[in-house]
Each structure stands twice: as structure tokens, then as C-alpha cells.
Length: 162
Image (tube, rainbow, N blue to C red; front, side, top):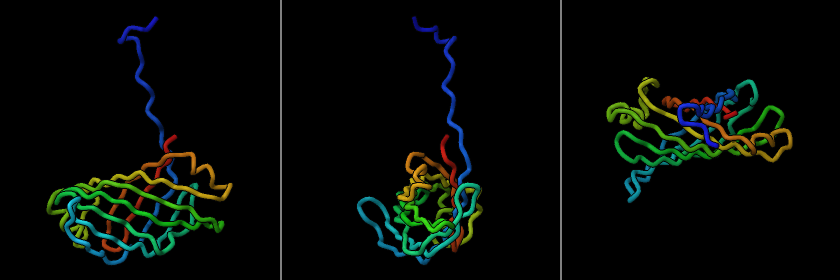
């Protein structure tokens, strides 16, 4: 017998555990220009740092953020790069994100000008995969994050979904 609607409890929301902050340095954008899908840009990833309670190391140069400016106020991001942990192992990151703000703020941000991080909605869902046994647990977890775009770097705070 099914309980009446007023007796049912809402499902519990998942929890989040802070994994690390990634400070990803970036180079000058490569502007592909308008395409049928939107305005495409590629942002080279030049390095960076990883620091947190469960993950520390560095961002290796050679990755990129493949951006699609869908409108003057909305950008879709697809960043792919590699982290090297302090114990010498490598973790592949594929980070999908949405960035939204006013026409003025997004224009300034896309020109590489400083913008107050609080005025931009920047959320992501990074997928971290590893081959080393001690990092295998990352292969079985989902993560979400918040982001901030600065003129020379992107700061991502990653949380594992419990």
C-alpha cells in the first residue's frame, strides 16, 4: 500500500565534499569566429596549481578551453587538460561549464578585462579520470564546481557529490 502524498518525505539532497581549488593559467584566446553553432574561441591552458584537502599538484600546460559563445550573455565551455598530483600521477579533466552574465559584463570578460566574479554565473561539472590505483576513486565519483574568470587565469572550486 502506498502512503498518501502528505505522508511521503522528500528525497534527501546529495551532499558535497570540497576536493580542491584549481587555479588554471590561460593564454591569449584563439578566435575562430562565428559558426552555425555560435561564436567559437579556443583558450590555451598554460599551467596552474591544484590545492585542497584531497588533491594537490599542478595543471600541466597543453590543454585548452573550447568555448562557444551562444549569445552575448551565455557561453558554453568545454575545457580539457591534465593535472599532475604531488605523488607524480596524472588525472585527465574534462570540465563542461556554463557562464552567464549581463551583456556588458560578458563583453568585458570576453575581452580579458576584470569583472566582479559575483556578477557572473559560472558553474561546471568536471569529470576527473585517473589510471593510478590510489586515484581510482575519482573514476567512480561525480563532481560539480564554481568558477571565476580572471584576466590571466580561471579559478575552479571542485566539490565531489557524496
